[in-house]
Amino acid sequence: MTEPEWVSLRQAADLLGVHPATVRAWADKGELPSRRTPGGHRRFRRADLLQQAEKKGEVQPLEVQVIIQNALGQARMSVSGDGGLNAEAWYTAMSDTTRGEMRTMGRNVLDAMREYLAAGAPDFALARAITLGGDYARTLIGDGLSLPQAVRGFFYFSDFVINAILTWSEITPPRSAPEWETLVRQVNTFIHAMLLSIIEFYEEE
Image 1 (cartoon, rainbow, N blue to C red):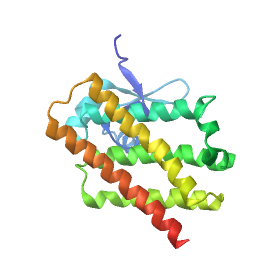
Image 2: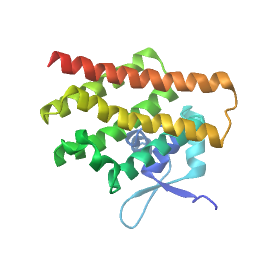
Image 3: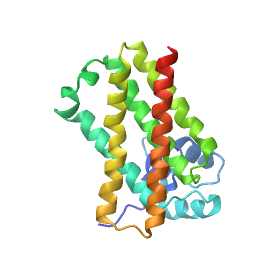
Image 4: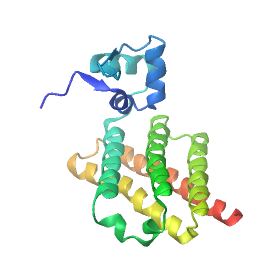
């Protein structure tokens, strides 16, 4: 099936591997052409996105884009499905407000991981993972969840990323084993940094 020539703001951000706010800023400055739908939504042409990627050096390996999108899709299906989460004690312990905050935070975590991998996984970029871990812990502490409940919830969703990596590796063999090993290590480093932040925040509280 032919891909559409024009894509949404979110799709443009996913293709470029940057935050939607960055794409919006480029469009506002006239650096990235866009048009508006009758409803006022931005649309971007794929050819313009590729040209922007070459200028900014923002395009990520296809593996990263597919893995993050796969993980996001799994998370959405789990949250919207009838089973799965509703059988998890840590999930039923959350208020509706906290569940909504967790959905937003999950998207932010995947965006942060995407940016971390795109930047080459520098140590200083783990500061975002640490901050997100603290935000996650603070929200769940406020809702009365214990540390074991928080960790179980974190593992439940971080496993989506690992599953996405495994799925992609089965469908498309890696170009090179060292590159693939590096990607897995980088993903684990980000996950571990966030998990340690959650634990440390709980201990401080």
